[in-house]
Amino acid sequence: MINYKRKLSVFIPVQNVEDIIEECLESIKWADEIFIVDGFSTDKTLEICHRYSNVKIVQNEYENSGAQRSWGMPQVSHDWVLIIDSDERCNRQLKIEIENILSKEKINLDGYWVSIKTKFLGKLQNHDRALGHSGMRLVRKK
Image (tube, helix red, strand yellow):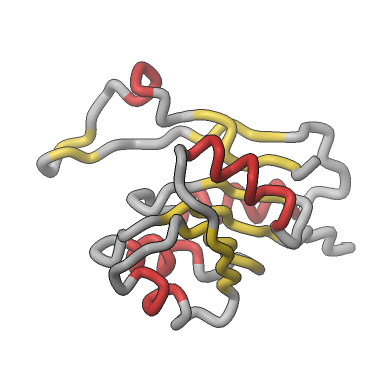
């Protein structure tokens, strides 16, 4: 059987997230590239990011997440991109689903919805769609 696995970039906008970025990076360290758009952090965020060999860091003054994506997405190396925030994690189930999608002979879609679960005070919340956390998170770069 032919392996069609495509390479994956993970896109993460960050700014002063030293307390949470390592868990995020650990959850996606399997990706071919981790592309960080940093809003000129003044804490140890970049120091932590530099510990990972597949991390590429660029800096852009932070306006909002959408502006960071618009500015940074054209610079990622690979055609398929997983977009996550620094306070999010990619669990094993999502990793397997992404690997299965990227290994298909033909991919007819340009993006996939990813359901994001929010945990607050130790409890999973049921309002993710209302808050806009779920959405097109695995996308083909245009």
